[in-house]
Image 1 (cartoon, rainbow, N blue to C red):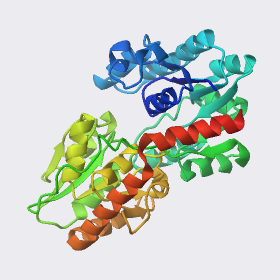
Image 2 (image 1 turned 90 degrees about the vertical axis):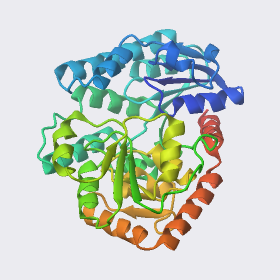
Image 3 (image 1 turned 180 degrees about the vertical axis):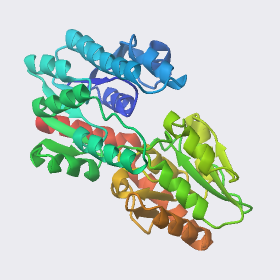
Image 4 (image 1 turned 135 degrees about the horizontal axis):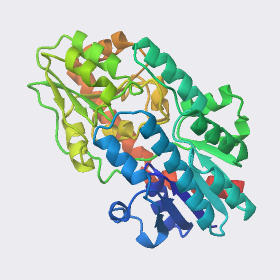
Length: 383
């Protein structure tokens, strides 16, 4: 069996590509990342074909703080369509094409014309569900939201219809597809893995403080307002909050106002080795997202011995059990987050017990090898 993958960025696709290359099943991985970035990957460069001409400048503009607007939306759409067209023109003959959703419609058509099976790989909930819940959330926060580009929504829904199968990383994501009418037989849950060599416990939290970590893009989708509310209510004399990741421009003023006078560190985007160290040194990681497929940082934190407080809409239920390695809470409930923080801060034996349970759970996940093998088996089954 030979498999072709496509992804505009990195995401989990390079991990999957590496695992398929190990078993001799990878034909090509198409990416929108530039060569100097892909050269740092474990995957042999001979498998990688890059088309970075739109996606790389777009991401550079976002990192430079260019606000979301017409230009950003047009660049995103142009990047998806041009990358998709490149993959479609370059599509080799193989058995399977697995394309990250939103940029694989033309390439999916090209693959099926060659007799290949097409997998739409969606790393989040159904795009209409995502758009709906984000509209609700922005309205609750009294912020303007233009919604997901209708052209992108249309592209994705046509991909879902065309695909022989849709892969998602969590039961939460799968449920959103079923809710919107996608047949259950078409949707397959394959949870992601974790790099157990890179993410491991390297230190212990300090007894002098109670350190809370958030890792990821600080945004409305990630539920940051609920974390901020919970942290402000949390009564601990030595509490500290670290935000590891970029901050969405729309939240700059909100965070400056709400966190004034509190012990907060904006760490920015961290290399993975440094993120593992920060996770190891944190008493708990909080992920209050209102929507995502399956946040990789959850398993990474557990592998570092850091208990996790997450919501039901993060895919947490496919990683750990409520009350054992952490807490799984309803979305939009800052009070529940505060109570969970109180429980951990007030009961060190409980926190240590959850830390140790998380280490065992992460070790049992088997790393990215298990994810690669599960995807390979699914490909074989559909083929």
